[in-house]
Length: 130
Image 1: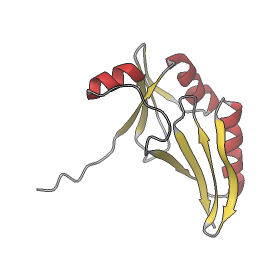
Image 2 (image 1 turned 180 degrees about the vertical axis):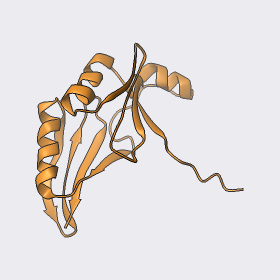
Image 3 (image 1 turned 90 degrees about the horizontal axis):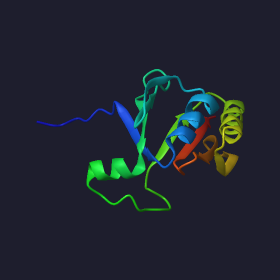
Image 4 (image 1 turned 120 degrees about the vertical axis):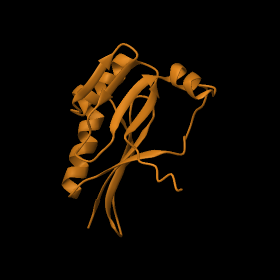
């Protein structure tokens, strides 16, 4: 029998819960779903999984791995929007909230996109097709 996994939540390990909560709730406007001292979760858009924050060290311990690590984690989060103008708006909002623009928006053959990194370095691609 196939497992056919379904993603209901994305949980990221963060270094500073208060900073990350502020970034996602106030900076990006994500509604808070749960707000506990060691766990926060946010509602994302319709049809999206929830986004959860957990202390980085505790999340690594939960998985039985070392919390040490740097550079590219092999995962990016994608936010597909309807226009290049919206790409620019989202990137600007993220930057005002404390994100680092790691790849400014650019026009490509298939559309328009850019990347930002949240305060813990998680990469978000914001893109629009033609």
